Length: 550
Image 1 (cartoon, rainbow, N blue to C red):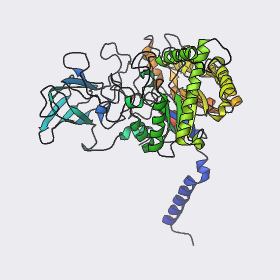
Image 2: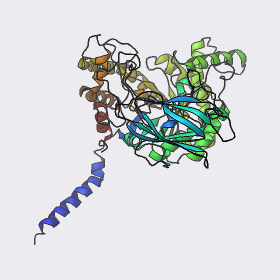
Image 3: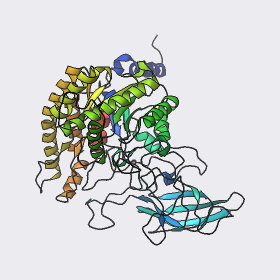
Image 4: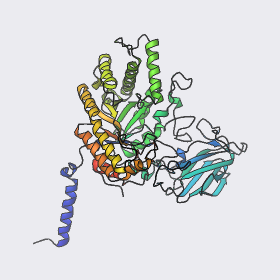
């Protein structure tokens, strides 16, 4: 007897479900899905990634009323005077001083009602635009002020003024406040949720998250020889109790507590950058902190600062001066143990040596069996200098510390595919084609570096990669921006990435999560954390075998 039609349908549905869950279906997932990583957009009032439910965690800093000078603050950065601050500025680049770079003037929609609270008493007013401040109330019993901030559609700037402030009833008027919170629309006023749903949703396709910009690595204190900036101690780090997680005059980089919180919540492996000025004790305390608080399944990729080779960053100067001082003042220095008298070579070697030292400290804290497994040191340097920045350094490391494969998990470069070959009148399609040619030309460096990595028995990965048509130039900026929005951009990302994996490349760390597009770059997968179906995003879904979030 044939089963009834309904049973036929159920049997087919069950068969389809089993097929979906079968190993054969799993084999259809791209082989490199677990090698796709993402650089997180830096934190700030102009960011487009909306990471925190509490908007106040990324405010610009408190400024005196009627001026541009920073307001006095306490040890955690809370205002000690009447002040104002920028909560968000998501206008297209140049809106404050036209012309605007983006011909389409794209701007996210952050409208809605934000719920404000703070400890202390304050009058609160809108600083600019059509935003409205409603229902300002002071509760003397709790010494707390609350208000509703209504941002209408089209609002790209939110500035709030705090006047007649009073920290406690015993303090004088104009004494400031603490514990400012501004909960985004759609979340309960008493929520304990840290990261927004939109932000978490955007991270799902990726295996690894890189925190370089989150940690403000390129702006960390590191002015070698300058009192107060020569060494970064653990006690001076940013914490989750600070008034803002954005760059401020007091501290730099996000609190490690939030790095841990995001890694634990998402289950994504973490690529971290150790500040160039961090002392050995800072590194040790960090290792202890991560060992204690990270879930044991989270893998750590560890890098010494970021682009220490880059002449435009303070970490390059710091590292070079430190190398010169070491050779000059330390008779036990091994930077010139082969009698090399070249400051640049000492500089390259110190960068690798510092990573080696950091790796040994993490090894001591996590356990010897964790090195190269859970703890993965990555030696990153200049892609277009494969001999001086890789071959020469690894040869010296081998002679000085033994085989790099015993302490370095990988070496890394950054091969952006840029539009330098495009003319100043190129169409968006021609700009994308110029970037494709750039991707092809990068292959010669990849092949050299992959051969070096293979010779030393370590992985070859990319710490940053993606399409690049920035540089700060205003020529043809409209088409350079629009090039990132056309369907050919998806094909370009697929082209570069698949060529990389076909060569045997390891982690591919895409730069970066959603961010604004301007003359300085169109790095983001999109320009809006809620805009997750752009050509770039479509490439990511295909590469990772994931579907766009609904």
